[in-house]
Image (cartoon, rainbow, N blue to C red; front, top):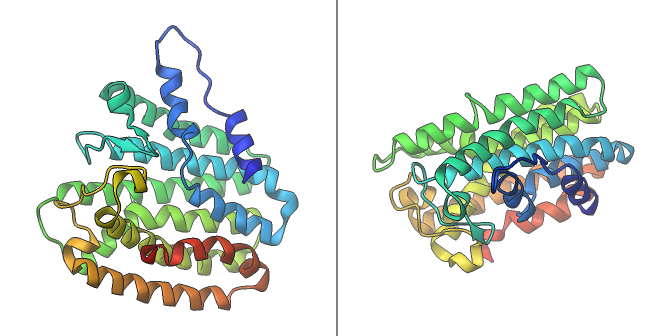
Length: 282
């Protein structure tokens, strides 16, 4: 990931102007770090099958991180989650103002596709990657999940509805990261199985976040916690014990699926995934 971080720093949005903090707002949340979970997954698939494509794949991994970061900036806004802390730093609307946060998120969203459009792949591969990112991050993916999440605050949903909510809001970008890696290395037969795996991994990731929201302090989590009481989370529906059970079942299923993958993929992905598959027990 050192190469990815170097690529990110080299390609950080640079927009000099007389605005007092616009450029800094574009850069700060990217440079604040984060788990880089989605880039790790995408680059892991590429490394498993063709490490010579890793440099080129950094464009796709960075595009994914840009889109994810935009979503966090907007998710933290007062009109949505009204959070004060993200990646151990004040959220952009707290550090600057709401207008700056909205525009910074808009800019990172569109910059993601600019970066991806310049990736040194064939036109066919570039178009497929752009489509994958747009479909999973846009109207029928992450944005749909966010719309459901915000509209149904204080209105209890069923477990299946909550799964649908978080499949869109969280899981689809995680699944797309894995599938985009498969597209880059030309492993067509892997695309759908690894996307399906990613959906389940994304749901586990969300359940764990719901658990951590009530079991970790803001200092431990690096973001605002205990902020989901009015939200349709797995914990609010199932309780802490029920959410832990749901996470355990998904973790066991995912472990079995990993063991069915190509050995090259297992060797690369398992060391990373095992950090997350049981993190709700940490």
